[in-house]
Image 1 (cartoon, rainbow, N blue to C red):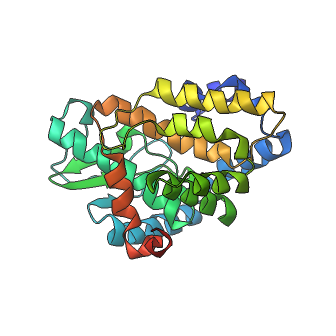
Image 2: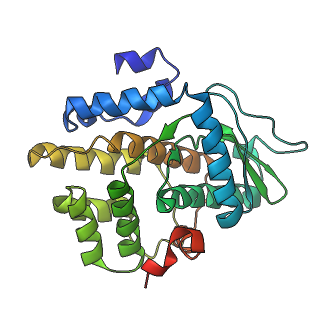
Length: 263
């Protein structure tokens, strides 16, 4: 944590629980963090990612255009555009908020490398088009982990608890079902307001349960925690509710996301 304070990663400290560092095996934590940092300097990999994710979104989320940037600066957004999204009108804020949630689901369900940088200052909007210029902050997950996450969400939104439990068991979290239900929230998820306090609280509960049950988390939770934390922060700043269920279903129903696996 002391290393993060004086780096370009300092923004991560806002939602890192100290318990996080005690429930991931040091070797896995170091391996994932090192690989994450190394990829920020791999310009060729970043270019491939921009092309890959941009092409995927052209099919799944045509309103989202992906633009290359750097760790410290966004790419060139077309003019005229709106970048002060916090002070934009409610309709624009709701539009961007929905796209951010869809971006998260579209990447997780695609089963590929993932852009983790969904900070609000990385977005701009022009009419109905949302421009996204993520930093070269990329997550690479195992096929097993992403498949399990996909099954977890399909089980939750499909009302299938056993499917959720099976997915959690795959990634060694069969004992954490109740905490994940609390994290996802109550109701039908059609009118959700995101709050960083909820994210920090529920993830802290997961970490503390790990300690209590003497369980470890997989190192991939480093990357998952980054994208979820940044998403919660952005959506809280937008200050609007999101129909998360519709966002998930829209992405899932696209042929590129393997919708045949969902009832």
